[in-house]
Length: 388
Image (spheres, one colour):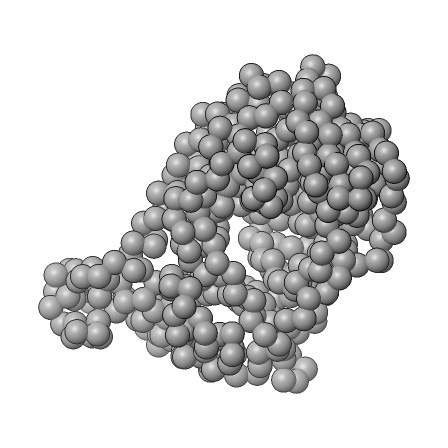
């Protein structure tokens, strides 16, 4: 899709030299939610916004994620309460979150040239020479590799091109009421989720997860002919969405699973995609857990300083570490089930085709017995392509 510049609907406040309590690097979804979650009282918060063009993508949320977001931000961003089991265009959500920021949150546009961590006053230097300091620096977006290297940080990839996330907008052909959100499995591995789009009456968003190599024919097809590619992957969805057409191009994003080794730096904290890459197929949004912990710890850090000992305690929290390890294992299991060869892959393909197909309504009567075939029996009926 055509990239769109950062919206000017919310005036950017700039200054040659600004001091703040909390300095947030990144004005995307993660950065703006961070500012809203930490903007209690009279805290001075500065968000550094990149002047680069912003592409259009779709963001979808479960009802539980929407509830967590509302709990983090209170009543500051009413738009977040409307996201349960739905989605929104990223550009629209970001504009709504900017408008919800209180006056104590300021925005500065510029490219970051250097980051100088310090326990008391971390400093960010912009490419035009301006400097912005904060008692706590929160990096809420994946910074350029050269900035990571300058800070002595190293990102290690646990699963490169783990999956591809494809976003599509479906426009109604007539006056239709959008259905409730639903999800269906992708034959051979992966999942598709269809959801109503906030601020776009009748329109739907579709998020598709594919375990494909970056140069696969399926991904090339989504970039050139997204509607034909969608119904080639999910033919059973064609009847269900017969009143809709794919609008515009598909957004195809590769998702790596990664982590940052030994991230503690005085006065600086990494959250969300700056800290780790999550698998969207697992439904995890680790940013919410990071912010819940940060809401509790930030007042202490502002008063006593964010030294290495306190930051180590934040990153090494045992409960969150266990949750991250469990999410990683779940992501790898899902990928192995989709891409590994052998009879179990054939079984999964057959079962996912069966689950994706529309099933006739059936009723069980008293006295009838139902026999469930074992996996061995199912495998014995499969042909070489995994068909029953």
